[in-house]
Amino acid sequence: MTRKLTLKMAINEAIDQEMARDPKLMLFGQDTAGGVDAGGEVDCWGGVLGVTKGLYTKYGDRVIDAPPTEMAYVGAAIGAAVSGVPVIAEVPFIDFMGVCFDQLLNQAAKMRYMFGGKAETPVVIRTMVGAGINGAAQHSQMLTSIFTHIPGLKVVCPSTPYDAKGLLIEAIRDKDPVIFCEPKNLYETTGDVPKDAYTIPMGKANVIRTGRDVSIITYGPMVQRSLSAAEQLAEKGINVEVVDLRSLSPLDLDTVLSSVQKTGRLVAVDEAYPRCNIATDIVAQVTERQFGLLKAAPQMVSAPHTPVPFSPVLEEFYIPSVERIIQAVEATTK
Image (cartoon, rainbow, N blue to C red; front, side):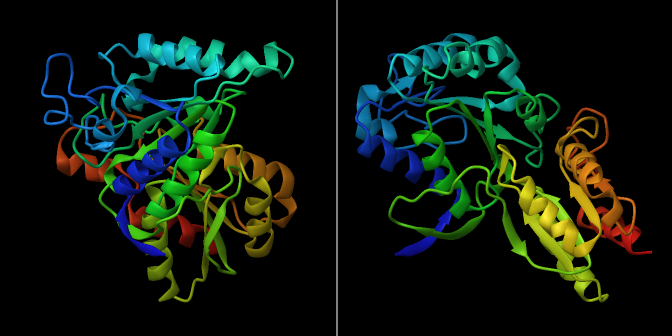
């Protein structure tokens, strides 16, 4: 049975079903339980944007209200996970992950390696990414590539409600630390989502539009813009294939290479800053392996190398547009 859910509702349902399935699973976050001496169920926000609203009512003291001290509660979540208690910890914005970076970089990511494969760290760090809601420079960054760079961390960024639920359940059941990146400007988008629990394996990209002329490789908030560009290009006779990576680490490079082998042209799209982002990684890996198959120089579409502006007009200019994606595709076909 499927029904329409927003991406935000799909995430809530995934957590709800997993907390019902596993009585040890806990949720740490800010404003998840209303705060000390607050109204509890009445004053429970469910996080900064209400994604987990209602879970405190169902699960009580398994939903922990944390102060805005990411270093403390992410560290506690990692410690609990290593001790056998799985935790979902919400860092409201990826911009503030630097506060708890040591716990992720030098602790959670290294546990399995340093203990000869015997240590497990079943922790999921949920965090919001991307611009589009006028959150300004400190609440709008797409910092996915920072965590993709670190061995031992898995990094996921869904683009649809269906993917959000399936990937989050998979992440919760995984025994390694997962950075689950939620594009906040997609929270209210809707899609068909099965009522029952299901998983989508990490490291498996999704070819969401088949084509023969150009491959667009992207993820998260850029998927819908890439699809819109592909539809407009089809009217010009350019047949575009769109691949949604879903998972950034592990990366489904086989699907990427297979697509580019078919089309011979590559456009990599990423909302992140242009230096050392996911688009540059895709272009580098494809060029290294399939240089002789490329019919044109690969193109990259990213945000400018500047902080995210607060002005709505400038922010919209900052985010990679459908028009810029179209221009990049056309540049490969000239």
